[in-house]
Image (cartoon, rainbow, N blue to C red; front, side, top):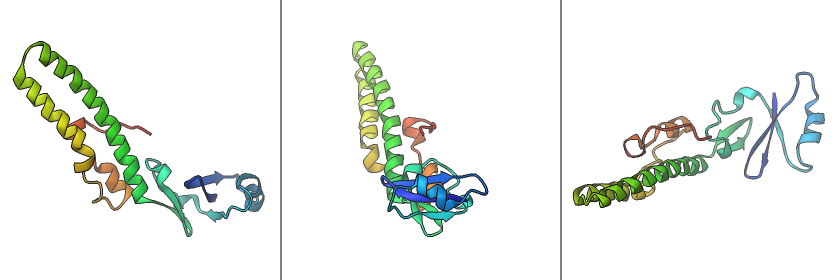
Length: 147
């Protein structure tokens, strides 16, 4: 069993040893006046990828998909920014080599990357597992663990 309560926009989880009185544990761990609930640890989401989007629901912890999408798009932006930096270097080299065709190709790639947050659809994901699978590999490369 674990104690859950909302704190700073997310869910705090307090584990305690078997046999401990949850009321005593909560008195020391949960801010005064904050409602808390005792749930089975199996009711926590199985993965922590969207931990900051967790929300307390009756008898379990769920995921606020709006927040999860924001978190995921932030990770996509971080990866995209790294790719943009790489392309900046490639563009400078193409400029030094006086290669207008390559410069135009790189400029187009950069435009597509800048547009990515507006064009890559995360709304189709209804669960954290579905959301996790959405990643623009073809534009920014394979997904790496960022949490």
